[in-house]
Image 1 (cartoon, rainbow, N blue to C red):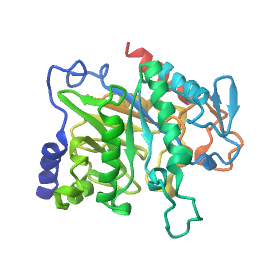
Image 2: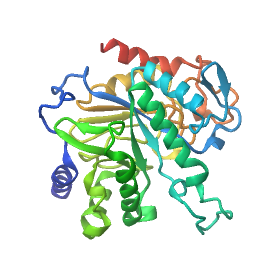
Image 3: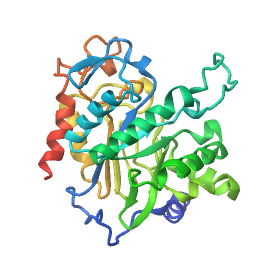
Length: 327
């Protein structure tokens, strides 16, 4: 217990727990009307749609929406904004999305990992353009440093800093902390140990961000940096950030689609966070945490199907109605 408390205090100091200040984003403890709503978006991995899960994109139902297509991006981000969410978290957790030259990784095909020029760059540029048009903002979600080293992701943090983090369209934390935000796909307690042990040159760019961390596939002790995803429901230890998704499990063997009532309860629970409430992903079918307007009835995966013949927009409407009621 002493070790956990020490880690929590260190996290608050190192990574910057939110604090009271004069920011327009300040919020009073216990007031659920001001926590900032966000959602993740998945810009890769369309194969997880199984070729049959169709998202409504404008007036079309398609299985292969592409954020590099500005019409698709406008339609999806406009739909997210209409639900009451102005800030999105772009899933860029796969190292291959950042590769500018082919990488030789086990199990990969030639050129499979040279995705930056072929896909990712255009997707981010289009999202940035549309966010500027709509008055929305984005932050980036990077991968597991235990799987691909902290130094590697520090290099990615430099690219994010140099190209996006200082722009107005990139979300700053607020609540007395003006650093740009970055979400890391790793548990807070473990991330802090790795970060603290790393030499300065392996974290010099990561240190410029307000970092949020995630639950991955196992139970964990939540710290002040947690609560940004990516399983079931989670909260930072100080209740400033809460995440929920319409999937009931943590480990993939436990995944199960939330009923509509369970989703309503989760959304209300997340809204009790005092700074940020994160509502799953609009369209992540890989981890089945999506709540977007989708026709899922032909999916062969139970935890991806909206149950009980729910309408394609039923889970979306839960978020929209909840956020509308706060106004």
